[in-house]
Length: 263
Image (cartoon, rainbow, N blue to C red; front, side, top):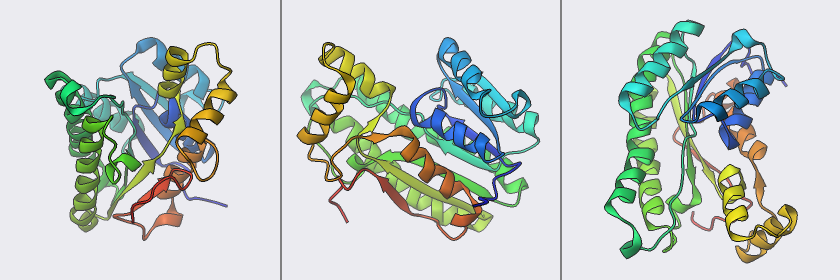
């Protein structure tokens, strides 16, 4: 199936690992050009080398960027637009959760989550918007989580800011539709990413990975019976960026193995 992505330019905020990296792979497979960013220079270099197995060097841009820094985001998106002569797709995939109950979360942690879940997205959309408009429209896909609708006490700061991002995405889908820019969200459940791998190594270093994730799926009562994989989320993102999703806007698609119960 031709998704109509050949020659399109996709900018992925936080594409050096996990879901973002898998999304970059799939875009390259579809003939798109990609720009990824990350704070770790070493991880970014490794990601760029990895992506050469999926596309040509001329179709890949990897730059260091702190997504919570407006200056960094502006510079990164400007660099992507200049290299590829425009932007068609923006994927806001940078994210990190903080665990803790209300009275355990510090002001600094609250600020960090607000910067990451609100302002990082605001900076990226502001910077990418004129380039999308020049193309006659485009796609913005915000990665969210089931926590946005179903908060958990031990993740109060992440859940609260995720809910705000869901509201922001819905509002923007209405405003930016006037520019033929389709804004959608992908809501994640438990996905096997670098972040979960770090938790596994910290909490159960002697446990085999498959055993750990099987046990995690049971403890969290995932109806599908397993933890999701990054490529399963990436497939949804690429679909939303494609011509096949040309009338999908303001929607949230859950990639969560039926764990979400909210309507």
